[in-house]
Image (tube, rainbow, N blue to C red):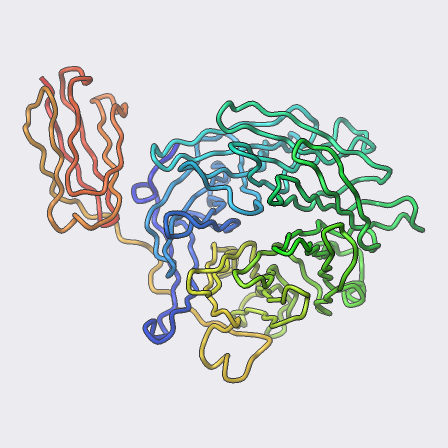
Length: 518
């Protein structure tokens, strides 16, 4: 299922060269696999002192399927390790998951499963870092299933926030929570149906005591013209509805709200419009910009921060170490006469005061800008790392990492006179990564019967994690291990007598050799 990208693919890395990195630690990097037209970064998680960046790759050939790629990167966006999940005969797309779902040396991803001509379904994918093995659980028991949020539950459980439609009866369009035990792989589902119609799931978030907050939008029949309203529910750890609050009446086709519980018990509820709809004139968005509500622990209104008037979409809210709120998504902007989207990020205080708001753009006269942020984390130094996607040229989009200072500035010049819009220039340093070099590989004893040692040259002792694979003459992998030292001892007792091919993959190149087992 997993194939190393060092063997199969080369990464296009677009990095900032016009800035002295010693003087300016911020960076902007874009990742695109050679042979693919589109890569979108959806999730960013802290793992092993670095960050796990989840990408959705779309190949150039229409005969291939979309796949998921995981990149382990450091705080400067350098790739440390890479995993590719592509053993599917249909398309899989990672969904932006809420919070941190990396634990027990695994990462869990919520995915859309899409087979041509069939209703969409839901999948739960887990990747084991230690064994480089991935498994996939598919949920296909309804006519249409879509996942919107994934969080850790109590102990070894995960909670999936889903909407489902059974048949053509939209009155059975309901919100559901699926409680999945990662050890037993057993799950149970609770569905929620109120007096409202067509609920649109937003997010779920967990509270310290194990209870959940659940946000969604729905058509409220108690309002004139069947207007849509935002809702917030508190759910007990065993799935019971403890209370429900209506938050904000909006217009039809409002979109999925975002949630963030604060340390003091307050709740942040972000409400955005469906900016993909073309059925409303621009004034619709100007009149109804993004709203971020600050509520108390019972869901009662405390304050509201309006972010506008430019139309856009709020994708995520994250809590910062000092209690501030980081928000991100995209907003509309016209550059050089071309209308498009630019990256949008803002910082609010715990009580809702706007500290700063930034639009991040790449000036171009060739194509309309298309930039978006889906996720963000705070680095140990207090800087901000944002993940999303941006267009490189006509027909090509890459996964994007951007590092900003805590004050939202990219370049020192931005901070001398704080700007609402920051223009970033990138230089393409390479369009293809060179083919991996062949490395001399030491194998001894050879032939072997009990065990043998695989050794790399001294220059590769510090090349990070290496992967050793042993294949029989038929090409079947019979041994696989990751190691960090310069050598690795392989037990030979379990191998039948014969000739075997060895391959060691490092960040600096590939080594191959042969071993005879007696």
